[in-house]
Image: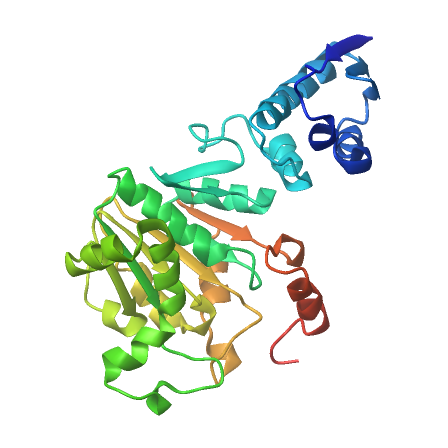
Length: 311
């Protein structure tokens, strides 16, 4: 039997959870340990190996608690499932510093694995439903690479296919038609850089936000290139995009294979490309599930009722 005395300054409700929900989660993760709390003393009964593993987790929870960080089940999930050899070892396990003034908190283990894959792979696919953070985390990773001087350029692109509408119906020239379509990407960049800095970086061409058709004929070195909404790109378009890859660059491709806006659903090239590239060492594929949705939980319920756009 081992004992851990929880310092008096610790918030027991935040640490153990309302109605001990955090403690119950830890009991499920460490089924070979008998965990009990009396007052501010935690009693552990089990073999030395499992007690040592538990202590590593609990020490990080104590550190979060003393820093007045709200401890959620998502934090416990990430903390108990991450690999000690993580590529994100220079960051906190659930809080990733993107710029000197901006950090993001990861919501689940899939998000963690996604960022880890982007760090170690040349090409990363983020596949899954809306609301899982695929695009935002891709942009966050690109911004972090840029801030750390690992790349010199960020390029974000989308195929010019709108959900149920046509660009031709929008007013203005092609540039003005495209601008509203790329707003989600612009918004993510603006969150990290601020409007003034972002405009400056765009003017200096350190950041480009362009439709997919404009990528042809280019070779992109020292860049992080993101293809968003890739389910609306054809096989030939994605192959063209992938061959833009130059030296010291990374590619991130995001998409939802169940939400294809092309007239011919079979013409989407995303599923074919990522399946064919899965076995390459330099390529990672991370699949998000409905349980990974971090928007309003109603979104996952809606997608359970309407799982496929063409059903």
